[in-house]
Image 1 (cartoon, helix red, strand yellow):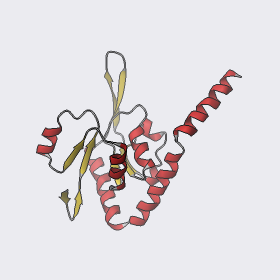
Image 2 (cartoon, rainbow, N blue to C red):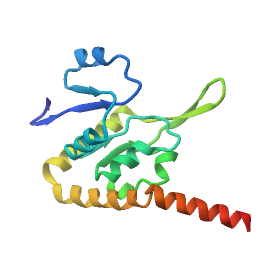
Image 3 (cartoon, helix red, strand yellow):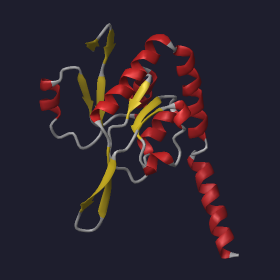
Length: 170
């Protein structure tokens, strides 16, 4: 763990594409890289942390923050369209978007959100202060996130999809 002020912290990089794992660990020894991660390891990782930092600037669905919410994590994230679909801002820490830009690929465009690293650092400082001084709010936010994420259980989503298809057929 890396010391930050009087607190220990660690950063986990999980999943693809981390082709420079050894470079990252050599340069930033407090970073832990795990690729791939088993379901049991994932649960243990979420159970051992209070916050999920979503550093992504583009998402089609934003499933990683939603998964973290299902485990009761508080999400720190840029507040772009895919996240706005489900993220309760009163139970998480959202970083404002400064603008957007398009990346053209051969077959599609990807909309990237621009956010300020300084704003993201301020959000992390807010989280750190909450972790040190306001565990009651963290517990409430954690429960809020579990409740919101439970609405996206695949069985409920599939059932709603089937009902929508049936309505269209009528």
